[in-house]
Structures are given as C-alpha cells and as structure tokens.
Length: 177
View 1 (cartoon, rainbow, N blue to C red):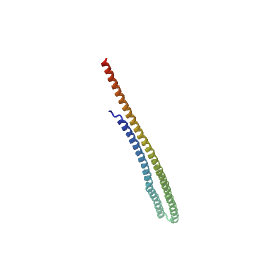
View 2 (cartoon, rainbow, N blue to C red):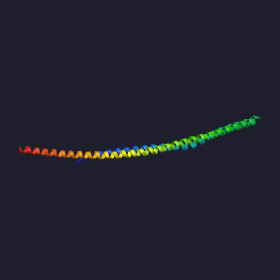
View 3 (cartoon, rainbow, N blue to C red):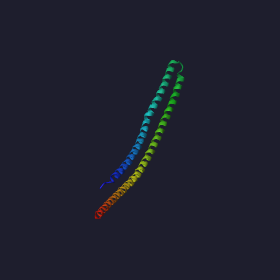
View 4 (spheres, helix red, strand yellow):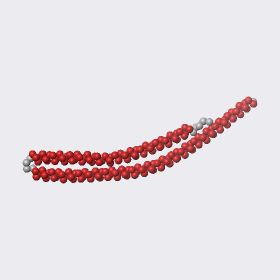
C-alpha cells in the first residue's frame, strides 16, 4: 500500500516551521529595537559630555583672549573684568540649559522606550496567543487532511479490488462461453 499522507504531513510541518520562524524573526526585531533604544539613551551621556567639553573649550578660548587683551592693553582691567563676569554668567546659563535639555531628552526617550517595551510585550503576547490558535487549527486541518486522504486511498484500493474482481469474473465468463 502506497502512503499518500507523507507529502501532506511534510507540507503541514514545513508550514508550521515557517510560521514559528516568522514569529522568532519578529521577536528578534522587537528585541533589536529595544536594544537600539537603550544604546541611544546610553549614548546621550557621551554626547552631553562631548558637547560640554566643546563649550568649556570655547569659554577657555574667550578667557585666553581676554587675558591677552588685559596683558597687552593698559587700563582695560576693569572692562575686561566686567566682560569676564558677563562671559562667565552667560556660559553658566548655557551649561544649566544644556544640562536641563539633556535631562529632558533623556527622560522623554526613557519614557518612550518604556512605553515601547510595554506595547511590544503586549503585542508579542497577543501574537503568541493568536499563533498558538493558528497552529492548533493548522494541526486540526492536517489531521483532517490526512484522514480524508487515508479514506480516499482506502476507497480507491477497494474500488481497484472490485474492478479486479469484475475483470476476473469477465475473464471467467469468456472462458465459459
């Protein structure tokens, strides 16, 4: 007897594996996105430090210029002192704004990442549930297909047997004549 169900079973198994691999790829994509968000947030500290150092270098350059003017131009000590104080006040304000901006950006990104994580977990849980139902239905369809194929095969074999018996009867009748 030929087993006609093997290709059907193999096809259904391949389809299930494809569904499972697609789910794994989606989960890996979500995990990649989460890791990327964490890397961006972690990278903000380095970005903030680099920008702060660049601003500090600008302040030092301005102070060096003021020092040079103060040393080379007599009678400018009072004016340079006022300019130096104004420069320091301006840079102090800039540093405060800079720190506040990075704190706000970090907080917003962390909130966004947290919201994404929550939604991603809910989405993956729902997807897992739905794919579980799809796999169950798929397995039931496989069972039904295998059963139908088995029944058709049995009916075909019974029909072949009947045809063989009829052919044998016809052969016997021809011999009797």
